[in-house]
Image (tube, rainbow, N blue to C red; front, side, top):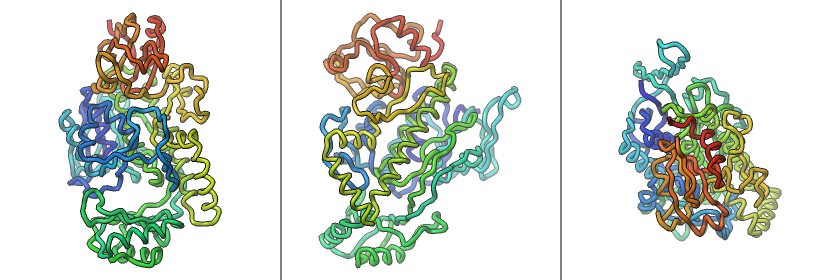
Length: 510
């Protein structure tokens, strides 16, 4: 019996596999497709995703195949310059093809010892609790009739998640009301004409575009155009003729598109799983939430789900998790997903073509000229403003709530302003930078006083004594970081530290 079966070999499942293997958890990744998809739907890695890649030593690999972008306040078609003073050492996003993201995360997962099996479709799921025969765990049935036992299963298998369905988790929300066609294809029209037509059409229709040389493929355009209606069966991709008809109806020309690489459709359906955990089955990424791609948040939300879940599930498997730690995955991440669903709903309203939507978009653009508003919107989209409530014992899961701070600059009663937030990559005088200290996915006590110690937890928490001008400015004598980089404690009192360590890192060793 393996420790964890991850169903789905996309970015979320692969990131989770990497996180689990850093803690020596046995992982089998089951992917239905026999080969990696050559379609690159998700292309943007926002700031928080850039940070988590840096926290695990992966950023260099991604920088080698990506382009940096600084599109601050990209919300509902409103573009504004990147705001000053965003709380990060990485004030940019990365334009990275999803094929590269999958390739790089696959490579890292294999380096760490994950077992990735392709051509494996899950068709059945049975949980076993109590007794020794069978031992507590989950039996996964595959399409070829074989079975696989594990202690836990995580569904990272997309919006039509088989794991979610088999686990009986509700997926409430709103069905699609509008639909958009998306695909990569070549065009015979010259580049200048295409650019001019796109610029003109986008004055009134923001769900339209033709991006040249997508993913470095010369002459290949990523075409986006509104569909005529909502298809009854969205699993059936559109045809090239359908693309041409919609291009002519929207732009007056089909640009001579031909030789499609891939074609797809997406709607504005917005749904979220009622629960992210049912016993020994958990959900992450699109299996837990779907929403329109406005703001480019979907892939990032999934990666960040995996980053939150990985160390908690590893702690459970390895036997040191305090009561409630694994449940805190739902109580922390479900509200994050709900907040993203809400902001995409708002963006869809802003993208409308009616006079009311146009007026609202113009008003919103004027509001975003205020620096504080622009910073707030950018922090929300890039996820650097995500904050968890770490004041209470995690066993009391009803109190663990997520808060994207709405009162800018206020701590909303949580004590030190950094509690619950992730700490940016600060410079350290002796050890250089903070984030390399998090590569092993362990807790970290960063101690400026030199008087503290995580005695009893040194198998789970590293202790670094160092000083930093940035920490001076942040008024941090010492800080306890969870493996995901979020601040669990700030202070300088050893007794207070020892009171907080069990809340996140379990019972001390003898």
